[in-house]
Image (tube, rainbow, N blue to C red):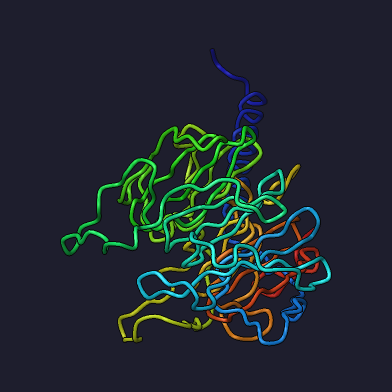
Length: 380
């Protein structure tokens, strides 16, 4: 059918409007993607813990806080108990005002090399010890309620393996575990992290249910599971550190999604410990690699993740969008030396355990005062 000139003009105008709309939408999306996340302003304190005279923290591997605002610090200190030449773990409790309360698990058989400490929804304390390959549950009174894994027997040296090989994973045992998380049913998820490269699911009574994962870089494979967390839906978030990503699974181990943290760093990074620099080295190749992750309580949950280089903390939505960044590596206040664990009792209150600085920092975030990395104000 032949169109009248007026109809043709209307069709042309409508078509041009659609093209403009599509181009505009794409331009806006492109602009949004190219805008770096805001830098979150924050305050920090390192002297809020009142450590008694003649008592010292060493490498602070773990930090947790309960509903009473009691803070638990898992430190690589002391030499009363050793395993393969490594220093012992010590677990300290501090009150809401920072006052020292007690040491939990003094001379405990399962303590040798601290890794992380967590609080479950019932207020029980869980310590993961990489040196003894054990995870121990304490009630609020400090009594051992459950133990998972087993320490190597002292009567004989561990079996040697051929160079470049890793022992086969066992059932009921771990090989340098790193962290623990739970779902609403009380199921336990263990990051069996350095050598077994798997997640272990255990029911609330301590019975092993299943495992998933193996060494590799593919979907559902891992290379150092260094931290683990869960959301209110029971999804399990695994910090796959060497692969520089966070993988997400449901409570049965079914893969859901994965994301990486790719935020530019426009300064020379402070590499606090590592290989000798060379003209061909690129320390920022590990930027965003998750060393520690934490998910805040509901109803609007967010995830925090920390890397070692350039030493920042990243705030993310649970689908992996970076909402903001803060800090960098260093020895000063508001700088970080290998954050090994994050406690996040609320969206704007963080406690970070630092290995290289032998301390805990308490952070109070002020996201509404943040600025874009370009220096412009954040649109709110």
